[in-house]
Amino acid sequence: MKLVEVPGLGDVEFPDEMSDEQIGEVLRSQVDSGSGRLASAGNAFMRGGGEAVGMAMSGLARVGQMLARSGVMVGPGGAVPFTAPAVVEQRLATATQTPAEREQELAQDPMYQAGQELATGAREAYQPNPRYAGEFWADTIPGSAGQMVPTVAAGLVSPVLAVGQYGLTSGQQGAEEAVAAGRPDQADVAALGYGLAGGLSEGLLGVPANVVKRLYKPAMKGIDSAAMTLVKAPLYEGAQEGVEQVLQNATAKSFDPERELTAGVPEAVAAGMVLGLGIGGGVRLVAGRPIEDLPDTAAPEAELNELPPEQPEVTERPIPEPPETLRAQFAATLDPQSTKAVTLLVPGAPDLATPDGLEAVEVPQGVAVFNPAKVDEDTVRQAGAGGQFDGRLLGMSQPEKPTGPVVAVTTKAADGTPEVVGELVNPKPADIARAAEAQQQAVPGGTTEIRDPKEVLAERVKPAAQAWDEIYQAARTKGVTVELTDAATGETTVETFSGSKASRVVKRQKGIRDGLEALRLCLEGKGPPL
Image 1: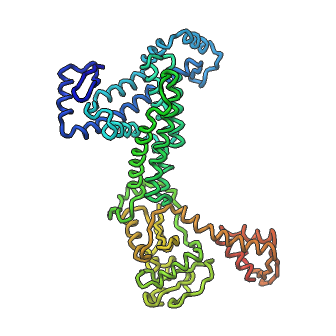
Image 2 (image 1 turned 90 degrees about the horizontal axis):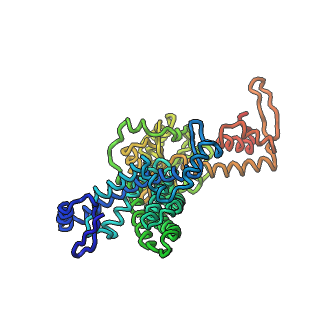
Image 3 (image 1 turned 180 degrees about the horizontal axis):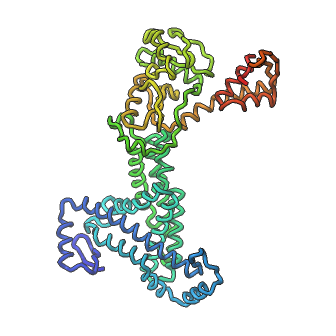
């Protein structure tokens, strides 16, 4: 590298291949450019990404050389035995090599060369503006952000792949520092120490390698609020960078005894927190956008068909809601500012008194408790005439539940009562937006979320399972006597269900809801449908 003294900037390094005319042109075009800061930051970003990929490739070649020296060989049939002649010959050949010779041999490896060419090419193609070289916002942050890109990309595929990539890059960095310090004999130690420090800290604390698990899924499911995402990301990434820097400093003492354990730690933590905040903001834009920001256009059919088919299909028999949710639904049905006109009590729902101002009518789907000031009884009966109750009277956006892939759109009351209104919709932005608008009108002041249907179903099943357990325990302790009629002969017999007999009732049903209903009928003396 050529060392050039630039007035006001000090010594600046330029590649040996650059002529004096080229160096002068760079200084004139960048130092005096009004947009130099932004251009320099862009170059730092591109340089960081290229260096990360190139160093990972070189690091992979270095690991291969280290394994070869340890006697590990892989042939067509798998690992070659440690005592095989070829392995013994290889170990003897490498045992007499000096550290400098090992580095020279490594430099001939095609993978290592490709990585070095990529890293060197990135450094030369994306020169920083000397005025801003080393500046936190114009050089350090964009350069680190560029280095994160390969790790984030790998993390979207697999956290293990991301940890491996990051560890290889860190390991190669350590080896290069040892060689530059005149200690090639410590290159392997530095590669191992830096690689483990980077890989382990990234796997345990890093955001890029765990962006899906740590940020995207909690945001998508509504588990994390925007504030939580924007707090978690910088804390995790800042801690990762700080821990990694301390461990790498400890390793560096093998070739740089004067290095302090805390050297560069504050800067690393600060950069990590800034970059973590940026990643968190990006995740919120992708997975946690406010409902009102969704575009009012439907996704192309091709995109819809590509969605994973693992979402649960809609069920024809809703799971009963807990009492607090039903009371909040009654309140919305009574509220003149709400568009919700009916609360539907499905079979197995808690036995609640009909509030004053509301009326109840039986429909095929259960009992419809409606507000006569909003809808008449004939309309309510008509809404229940089909296979499913018309969801629009319940505060939803559609009359029936859709088929195919779905997401859950739910709205909780201003006091926090969950799922006052909820429906399954196809994952088209326009459908989600319509559902959110309808629910906001049904629950004024409520909070609308897009959630995983499995999570919503699990929350519904939990109280049902608790109710089932109460009935089941009652059947086991005191027994239930029921009359059973043989459909063929018309003969009636009396049988007492208790203990294992009570459990048989549940085993003959299809799931918790039917088992719950069967045991409730047992306790009422009506008998289960055996």
